[in-house]
Image 1 (cartoon, rainbow, N blue to C red):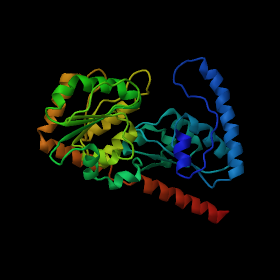
Image 2 (cartoon, rainbow, N blue to C red):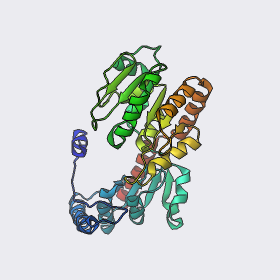
Image 3 (tube, rainbow, N blue to C red):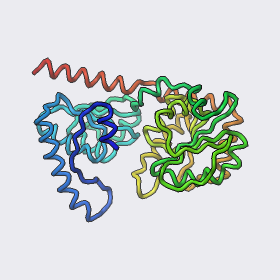
Image 4 (cartoon, rainbow, N blue to C red):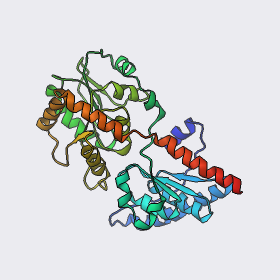
Length: 325
């Protein structure tokens, strides 16, 4: 999928081997050490051939070998962390990075003190389509009128099953208030049939920004990209963060920031059930003043144009390098 997206945008794609950075004991960790080393040398060969002026990393385990390889070749490295706390890859890449962009000012305290001079608060980049999202286009895509109040449910990926089953249970209550638009994901069978008040989609593609813009509230996980996209469109959110052994807890941390700032209601692990969801949705539906306060909070959180800020900083540094060389 990554290759198709990148090459579809007209950008060259280079794949490298890389091991997973696990935070728990596993015999696979030993084998993956060699994969990481192979990724380092593969990345170094590519960088020596292409001679980039600068390397930009978005984190994730696959980013570590290229960042280390770039540093070994004296190529400047810039990184960005999307979550409120730094992941393991970002913590490793710190030593290679001239600058690390972070989403919140509170995130700085979670980095080692000796590296804080390298940090810059940028927020999170969002796709350009969100800047021009049109609620009318979203309603037209959904076949809903201006009078329909929309609850948008974003399941999908790892979070599909829990959220899907919760919505299935609460649906008879939710449709009394809202037209429920539900992106179910591809990860489970879904037998609910579309109706005038319930519209399931396995996946919403390029229309998603318009659909979010049309929604009154959004029920979703709290991945960094999702919450920032919704906040950029000033949407009150009900968040059910992914938790448990399969995650480092970053979604819980993201949700807590949005809750603390007044932009979201949060169900913590084990709290989400039919009654709780129904009551939360009904309370927001009946409290316009509360929704307006959440809209204002979202607007404050996502007010920065992170993509432009990061691009300008990188361009400025690249320009300095070109002048020097």
